Picture (cartoon, one colour):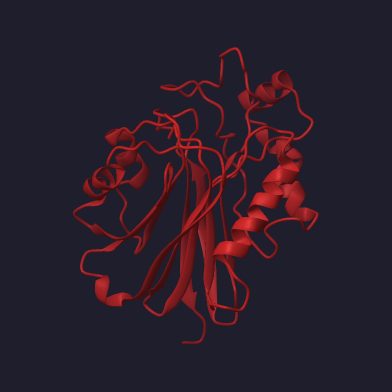
Length: 272
């Protein structure tokens, strides 16, 4: 969020199509102002806030349909810091989680912000492991679905600015997917074992000039990258089937130097 909030951006984020049951919003570099009040206004009258978790600028909000509290049997918020400081923009690193049993489906949602810069791949991997060990302890709690969402900060490996931007400009960003650090590390078995993600068919979500859909023209001239991601894992596919209906960025959000990503995930009981 780059330390700022725009109600118009939140309305765009929530969307007008409200066919979903749960709406989960993970934020990084969120401002200290009352984001949850603005989100509640943007999601009304169809949905209401069920739970929230905060670690300074890392935040997570979970909304359900009006009068759905009776379907909630468990709800707990947790957090884990891996460094950084809040500051004015709020570059805190770490994660917050909401654990919920909703309509007898046990779910964990994690909003995460990892260390920046292309060379810090190993550090990001280590941070993910620390967060997972803290928020997803093995065998202690059963869960059906786990979802990570956030600025995971993985970059495009061994790629220079001009060729990357040229490919994106010509709608050929799919050529860059094989160079994505997150996918490379997952393939090596270092991170996100057993997790699924939609196709990176959208343009890299970082770094933009604030207020536009133009990539960074500051003195830093960052190489574009898919820093912002959503990954999910079903623990037992014999019980629950997950279908990812869409996975895309929201280009019409202009308040940050990132474009947010949005996933539409449908869960179904198997043989019930």
